[in-house]
Image 1 (cartoon, rainbow, N blue to C red):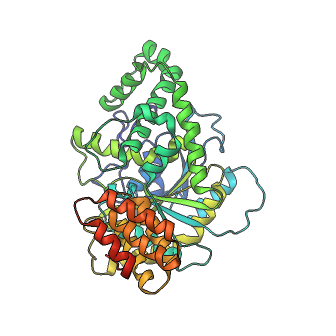
Image 2 (cartoon, rainbow, N blue to C red):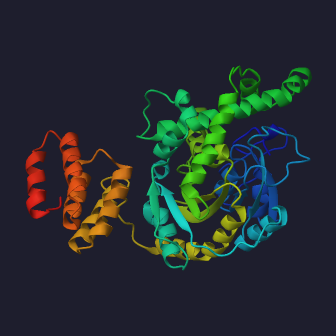
Image 3 (cartoon, helix red, strand yellow):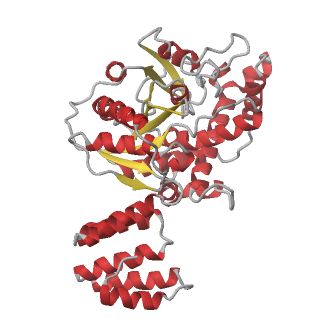
Length: 444
């Protein structure tokens, strides 16, 4: 493992690096690299590992196996040396979902019987912007697997950055005023910044005295991280804990008892991590994704979805804090269908990727248009609602929803949408467009 569980690559200058069985030329990921490799190489059925800021989820993704980070505090950490006690968790790896499930039921505390309930899959569309893998091999695999099973409600979509921004007010002071990332990621980037800052503060409290006294010889990468932690001087640590408390409430308000958030585990699998800059950029984006469960303390399961261009694909399922057995039951329930869909997607001709010309909001608009033409007015309104949640700057969505409202006789809502369309699109003749919608109910 990485020294002091403070690494990301799984390398160790003293003992060498475990070989990634999936891609021998690639790093195994860390910090729990040995545990992940032992499972991936079929030396053991399962293994344990610590996960502070992604130390189980990352190597599980790199090695194309299942990984599970439980809700924070659910599995006792007695007997381990703390890295950052607010973030530390005991996780586990497996190749077989039934083994992952069984280990969980051994380690997790006894609870009342979990009766089967309908599940809601919620896709974080802004998080999937980090993944250039075609949706045919990622989101669509999960959607089709769920559609083939009973007990799954129609999937929903959410902009996670916007949800967190509205529910975690203490995060505002950590947000950058501008950045080159895509819209909505500044909040997620701020969340990962708080996670790393919290880890550094607690690591300093736990180990500063020992580091200064012993002066251990560490690998260059680990040495830099330890030095950054020891030199951390954040004055108000209480705000870091406040962000954590607000994040847990934000996830609970979104997921409740039956919701499961679906995100990529890591960004696009890098072809090379041989440059310091390349590793730093990849790590920064990875921490953005890992911070959602890390800072909320929610449970997260990492699931392999085959390969793209010879590199492993991995998605993660996140459930509310304390819903660990519900999440494990879900993975056991859906895993076989996921792998069947992976096989179908791998053997299918590639489809045009919708990350470019037509994003998720456009797809929802088109579904709304189809429902409208089929005279399913309420269904059309619901689709336009979801499109507007993802992109509230598009006048067309408001115009089309206005047309559907008119068919339902909801004249006040239609008028409000028409006015909003004019505000958003002053360059075109929106007032004439509004008249046309009023008379004909045309769709754009």
